[in-house]
Length: 360
Ligand SMILES: *Cc1c(COP(=O)(O)O)cnc(C)c1O
Image (cartoon, rainbow, N blue to C red):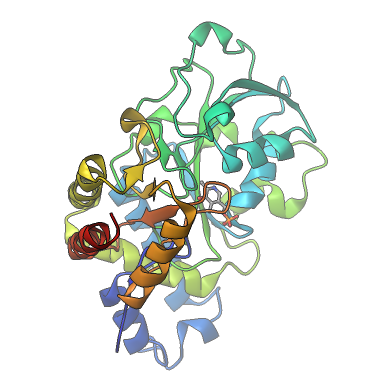
């Protein structure tokens, strides 16, 4: 086996222990005589898996009892439609902060149905910072306030949440879920596609305060109605069964690491190693203002496109893959999600030092 250090923004690295456990149980899930992939989603064995997965989400994120945990399909992107259809039904109006492509897409979809009030944007500087928010500009009658908490493409993160008072705060946490502790009670709804920090693509985790469910617009397709999925414990139709199973293995792994707090410590260590190097390098530099830096996605450049391309190619040869930045930013991006070991970041920095010495 020759596994590389995979810095992909998503789908991304999974812990080797998880892959091995899945491999062990691939052909026969213990005492069931079949693979999880072959199981009825209504079977007792599968019920234990999906209930067990929900229990771990609740435990690891300290989800309060008045929140529902849903396992859906359609990716993070379907939530851009589901959220307004279900939550923006009173005044049909929301506030949003435009911090990059994912927030922009969320705004675009919401605009089909409701009024979208763009409070602030960091488009003027290629989304390299989180805009300072002025509370007096927030709508008093918004149905919710929407943010993308960690901006996967640009490497920014809200290190301070907007103070929205009684207006529910809704956050896309696709690329930072369970990477650090988060107070769920501060939010009306949280969602994440699994493929960055929780497992394989195909599952979308939604955590929603129960009083916000049950008022969907009449036009809402059944499959887009949270109430349907709440009433049926995410088993209205066939859920992404294997994805939920692997997610459960990932959550067990997080628990073994010591929970989200322990994983956070590790993530802070990795980010510090990389940012420290970038701050002192004569060749590479980070693209984000220091106070808004992400723990998970670290974009950087040399300032010379040819040299960037050379770096990405040589890094790949050395076993550090998927370091090419998003096409809208250029340069490089290292995504250092939960499953990336500290050693992977240390070795990357060693490699960058060597590249710097050879190319400066
Ligand atoms: C990847 C990503 C998405 C899109 O997720 P899909 O599952 O591909 O629809 C949305 N928001 C953020 C922040 C992401 O990183």
